[in-house]
Amino acid sequence: EAGVAQSPRYKIIEKRQSVAFWCNPISGHATLYWYQQILGQGPKLLIQFQNNGVVDDSQLPKDRFSAERLKGVDSTLKIQPAKLEDSAVYLCASSLAPTGGREQFFGPGTRLTVL
Amino acid sequence: QKEVEQDPGPLSVPEGAIVSLNCTYSNSAFQYFMWYRQYSRKGPELLMYTYSSGNKEDGRFTAQVDKSSKYISLFIRDSQPSDSATYLCAMSAGAGGTSYGKLTFGQGTILTVHP
Image (cartoon, rainbow over all chains, first blue to last red; front, side):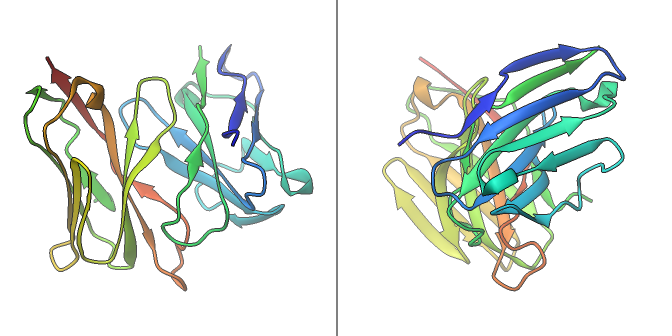
C-alpha cells in the first residue's frame, strides 16, 4: 500500500513570497489533515478535510494560509505572503475517517525555510 | 497552559535500559491516547493506541493511561539503538466532542539509545 505522498520535500523562499505544497493521501482515505511542525515542537493541526469539505480550520491563519481539496483526493496548502515564523515542516496525514483515535498516516513532510 | 505537556528531554540511555516517557494533559474530553515515533526527517508513525484508561502492551512497548490524574506513559523495555527517535504523545476527544478526530500533540521527547 502506497503511503501519503508530499512534494516538494524542501523549499527555501524569501519572506513575502508565496509557496504551495501538495499532498496525495492514501487511496480511499476520506479524511485529510495538514499539520505545521515547528522545530522542537509537536505537530499542530492547521486544517482537516472530510472528503472535499472543511471540518476544522480553527488554527489556520486565514489571512495568509489557504488550503483546498478538490474532488476529495489531492490537497494543496498555500502560504501568501510568507513570514519568517512560517519556517517549519508541513505534514500531511490521512485516515479512513475522523474516528477519534483511529490511525492517521503521515507523509514525510515539506521542510520550508523562509529567509 | 498547554493542553498537553511533555518533557522534551533530551533523554540518553544505554542499550538495554528501560525508558519511561510521560505526558500530562488538561482537557477532560480526551478519550483516545496515542504515542507516535518520529525518526529524523520523517513523518510520525503510530506506535501505540489506547482508548480511555488502562494499560496496553505490544512487544517491548507498554502504554499506560490514568485519566483520573490526566497522565499517560510509554515504557520501552530492553531499549535498542534503533529506538532512537523523537516520541510524541497525542490525544483526541471522543465522538460528539468539539475536537473529535483532531489530534493534539505533546512537544516530543528526543530519545537516544547508545550501544
